Image (cartoon, rainbow, N blue to C red; front, side, top):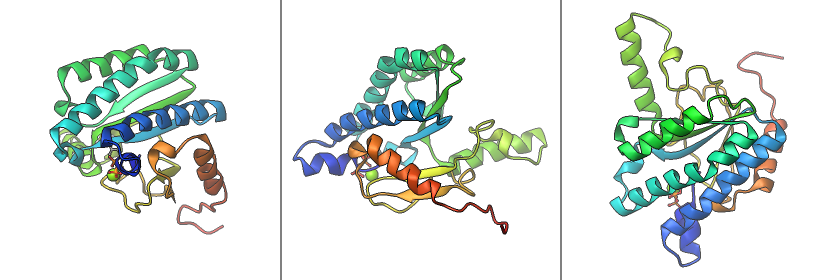
Length: 212
Ligand code: IPE
Ligand code: MG
């Protein structure tokens, strides 16, 4: 999800206003995912690097995410959405961590859609923590130790706002993922943009390194 700050700036408003509108896009994508039978949808909400943003913006973002997940709890339950948060929990406030635990527990039996919020996450952090635990266990398969253990690798990654980089997202898991880049800023990314990205994905020829 990228472009919230620019979206707000274009309207002469504070960056946080873009983050508020961005929450509406998350909701729209979640609803469309349920409607279209998508089984997993993930959002890169906040990276390890994002902690270096101005304190005020970080605090607002954390509060916004906390409020949004509490507000959506009933919608998750009603729609069979299993909600999960993946990332470095040690950096989250006890209040946010506690709320996440509660919502994850309350939606644990959701079987229609798994919605994942990557929060305080970075791909290098994930590989590092997985490698450490793998070595301690004397194993040689890293995947069970990544925070995404048990979750299929993404088929599609959509990056908004015209940026064309991975920005330390799922480095291991994106090995054969298809990428769609769009100039649309995240607060404008609603159902139609999502559909367009899925249509582009549907036209790709996935060979996974093999020949057809
Ligand atoms: C994405 O929007 C949201 C987060 C990274 C939290 P940005 O805040 O990166 O918006 P731009 O890139 O400055 O427009
Ligand atoms: Mg950005």
